[in-house]
Length: 102
Image (cartoon, rainbow, N blue to C red):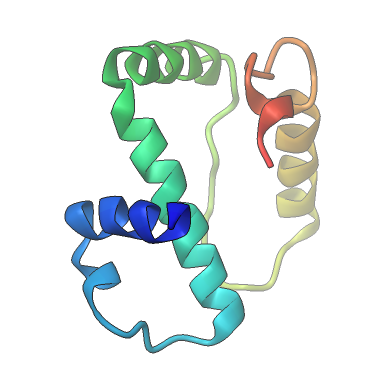
């Protein structure tokens, strides 16, 4: 009954949950989880805006991405990716809620 109620809530926000979802089962699971995350995100807009503002402040400290192109990563691209990874996993680049994400 709880799951049926939850799907009713999701369906009231997004039409995709009104009909049969024509996706592979593992993708349907991801879609339902994304719907739940979006629903929770929209429940507290002022709190979310504060988190987005914090993210924007922290993003100003990062170097801009250059030369975006094809799907073959150059050594420079790999270095940029590693720099972003290091930044977002550091105390300076992390956000308070990232370790609670599933």
